[in-house]
Image (cartoon, rainbow, N blue to C red; front, side, top):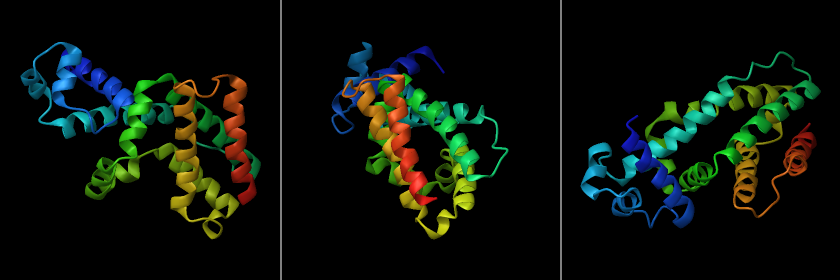
Length: 196
C-alpha cells in the first residue's frame, strides 16, 4: 500500500474515532493529511470506498491474529471454554492495542454501511471471525446451544459485549489492567456457563 494511501486511512481512523462517520468528508481527510481533496480521489473513488478499505484493514488484522491460533483439539465443555478464553483474550488484546482503529471498526460495524456489505457479499459475511466461528460452533455443539440460544443472539452476546468493553478501555472509561480484562472474560464466561 502506498504511504500516502496509508496516511489517508490513518486520518480516517482518527477522524471517525473522534467525530463519527457522518461528519466525515474527503475534504476533512485531505486536510488532516495536508493534501488536496483531489489527491484523495487518486486512491479512493468516494467516501464509501475509503471507509470500506479502512474496515477491511482492521478486519484482516483480526483474521491474521485468529489464523495464528491452533485449532482446538478437545471437545469437553471445560476444554472448549478454556480454548474460547485463550482465543477471546487474544482478540480483546488486539482490539485494545489498535485504539482508534478499533473505535472506527465498531462505529462502522454498527452503521448501515455494514448491512450493505453483508447483504451484497455472502462470502464476506461468513468469513468474519472464521476462527471464532469454528471454535464457537464446536462449543455450541458440545454445549448443545442450538436448542438453548439462537445463533444471532449468541454472536451478539460474545462479539458485541467484547466490543463494548474494548471501546470503554480505549477511551479510558474503565481501567485497562490484566484484572479488568479478566473481569470482562468472567462476565462472558458466566453467560456461556449459564448455557451449559
